[in-house]
Image (cartoon, rainbow, N blue to C red; front, side, top):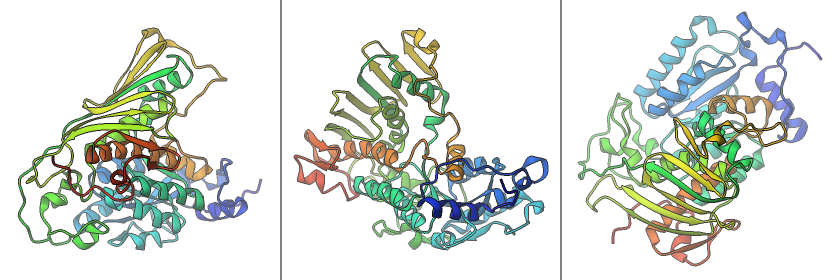
Length: 444
């Protein structure tokens, strides 16, 4: 093996060209590529660009990336000047002057995300924007040759998800749903137990999410705060006057108002639903398909409420293999029931009946899943070109399950769904929402 040191970008270009973007062997970083104390030299690190520097990005994702020696955050983008500057200071303060070597001279800051994607020194991007921007940005990143980690819920519509998954496959880019639920020990253990038959044949699944969304009174129009490019923030969403509860609190990282407005987000049904349904679909081996029947009921805030996402809901699904699936506002958990027992998991614990299931050993010839953080999984797959634990097709199917419930609440009645063609078999009204975000609640 040659001891010549390749840069990350040169390596990926060579590997991708060799096999059309599908190279999957692990990359070996020679010792000569390592810097002081065994840290990868700047040329061997994955250069990450972050788009959207709000609460989730700064308080969660950025902190994780900064702790990873094989990663260097080289560029950021946000339409809020205060957030952009705060993040830039944090990143440059973390790396310090000693990191300024090679091609890295500090963290570049861009208002326009396309300027970040155009950079040749960015290998992969983390997208943590409001939901309505997720797919447009991810598709642009694919076309720019970047690997993508995308904050959940990854889509606003089912058809968006299909386009996203198809584009990831066509371009050969690595994609990771940025959800930590599969990386918790309890969910990981539940998946291995169920997939290896420890509870017998699965027949019933129950998934709960917290019912914490609320309405609020009508809001006055307000001047756009200095430093916020509100036109860019709205992007592909319908145009509407600025008011603080539509966007986020200036110079703070509070829970943003856009998460409770249907112009930008579907609310809890996709928000936490893409965590909990995610784990349950993984366990039940249904993560690359969908149900065949959906029936749902839900409650929106009063018509005059400014925030207008669902307050509570219950959705019942039936899958082609006979599994009955209930998804509702309750508390965050999932329970998988089979002919020989059940498992229950949430963010903190796992329970089982019989309890002895938890002591079961997974043999060397059985199904095993890797256990690592979502960020580590993404970065490792950027380097190896292997499929992540939550690739685009899985993320699309998980998010679609949530969208199907929301659509069923909107149109009413029992809907029949073809998971292969991704069309409803008995409702033109429902099919009209396959490629159209739900912008207004259904009040009866």
